[in-house]
Image (cartoon, rainbow, N blue to C red; front, side, top):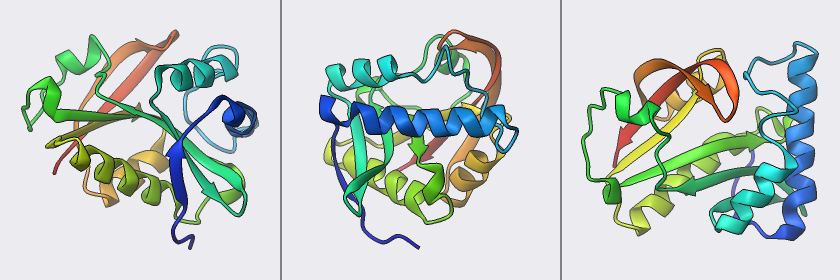
Amino acid sequence: MVKKCRFSKAGMEHVPEIAAIYDKIHSQEESGKVKIGWNRSIYPTENSARESIEAGDMFVAHFNGGIVAAARINQEQVQPTYGQAPWKYEADDSQVMVLHTLVVDPDCAGCGIGPEFVKFYEEYARKFGCTVLRMDTNKINERARKMYAKLGYREAAILPCEFNGIPGVELVCLEKQL
């Protein structure tokens, strides 16, 4: 079990390591080892990592001298899908923090990095005075759904959509109240 990654905002110098994690996940999905619902040529890509860093809301987890995980954290709710979800915890947009595209290096799977990153996200949201947490995952991503359930996230809805250019996604909208 990994204990205490160091978290920081990502810089452009982290793009190669983030892109390498995306590549490993895409390769695992293409070989049938995992089901996430991403597409190597569409999302996530090296360019999506660059865009997130330029927006100032990409974060990384450091461990043993390298990047072991990354995610985007901001207050942007995926539209129109989030607007269609029957959220249990209603809140003004300024009170909602959203976790996007959490990735953990597959070489570190099962080490507790995913839950540690979610804890960092929750602490980050508290610092900004947010009272509601939201995120999403693909319905076929059973591993993520199980992890989020263990961490207290409630599945508010499963909605069909086109997600980041990927058609036919059944998006699981998750929430938690702080």
